[in-house]
Image (tube, rainbow, N blue to C red):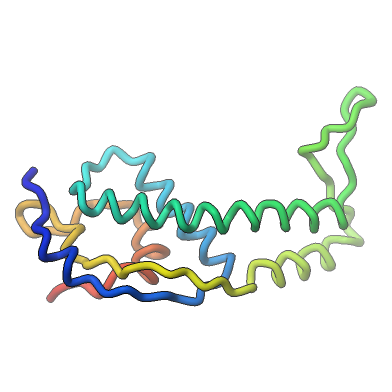
Length: 151
């Protein structure tokens, strides 16, 4: 596979985007699906994907902590053999609505992510066809961080 021309990288423009924490989680899942796939991607595209994953991962650490706080607020610790299993919580039916509302508020919060929009051309193979990446990548990361396909 031949390397992607540097001109594609130089033509990128800095951009920031305000995006919900829920959408950031979807983007992380899409990026993880790419990492877990056996698809070979050009080095330049891999660089930008890694860069984005680093930025979004730092934000999702905060989501996890905040989600745990909400879970502890509405959940009960699961007991096994008389011992607490601190990583497992059970939400009582009467708390489920309030838990879901709090979780929705958390995931609807907006975060500003500064990132250069990736050019679609970075995701083309040598023949000029789009690389076969997981749909979860295109429907999340592609929606926010990749410019429109070249026609």
